[in-house]
Image (cartoon, rainbow, N blue to C red; front, side, top):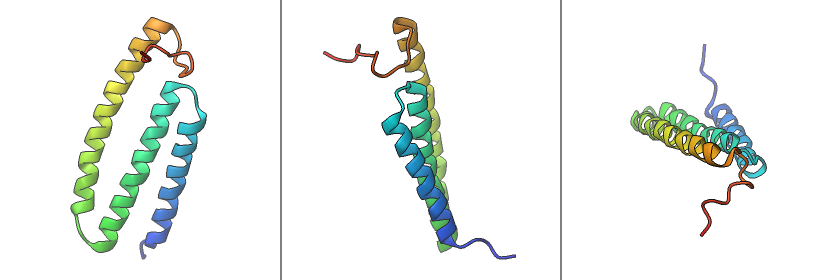
Length: 102
């Protein structure tokens, strides 16, 4: 059985990126924005792994490993910020949060 060609992985990665970008632009909930950001990061990770497998080099997979560590830290800090903003403002809507303005 032969593996799928590189183009199939890149098409899926571009679809994930498009869905994530659409979510970042349209959604007004902070949690959905963070979820969309994770989709964008996962699409980049999928591209790295696909190219790494296609070229027979493990550098892309090692880069994905470190990217996943950074994404996990980003989610942890992001959720902590969301919880604190929700406790203060009783809302996770980005339009209602104006506490970060001068």
